Length: 308
Ligand code: DON
Image (tube, rainbow, N blue to C red; front, top):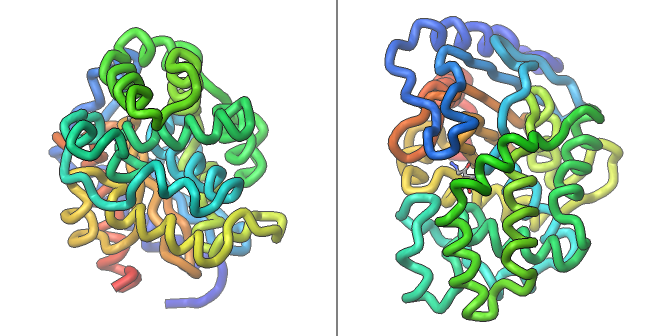
């Protein structure tokens, strides 16, 4: 394989061709009506190399709803601002449960298993809101600056749709507030969380924005967002918890740190080599993009690159 920038172009084109022929593509998320109309036929894949080179195939420049992909960026911001103390309020073990599950919280005294299930992401957004006063804007800013796309923005209709169907998230937030693990007033927290989830960006934007994870914490301008050790920690939590109750299957098939969102996006990291973002709105029953997981599976199979 050539070692120059752009070395994965042929592989990406080949995978996009294969994904175009995929027949079982899953179904778009239907619990947020604003996402239900997405076309499962869409597919995009982008690769960002550590020097900022980005390229892709298919719908790789088309914006989609980032949803839970934003949880990676919120986590990185909180770790950069307060470091280790976050881990007193949220764990880093796989939950083995669906992303919006409530069941473990009472057994575990209001401390969510990890920052990527909804309960844990609400704690992270709560911390970011407490530390900055504007959590969603901070996530938007990080995406804009790292991707170089100042057009990345919230989609108010998606945020409103989530709020209108947000009873589970409200239940999670109130329950954790009862344990003292949420300090922002719950309505304010939910507004920030739904705005954060409503951010729309393309595979190109998100692969570039997630490049600090392949660069061991270093931002596009050369400054450090995270220490090398913190970048390793975020990648580790992505590997073990980023695809919810399918994290074992994702590690088995793909073998990379990855984070999915119900908009159909997945960010994956080959530390030191590249950050990938794939998007296809059809989901499996665990909420992960069917074509997205297949494409990443093909990428690590064809290139031999994984963390294992
Ligand atoms: O909290 C929610 O329901 C969504 N806004 C985000 C969920 C999500 O993307 C989980 N992913 N697979």
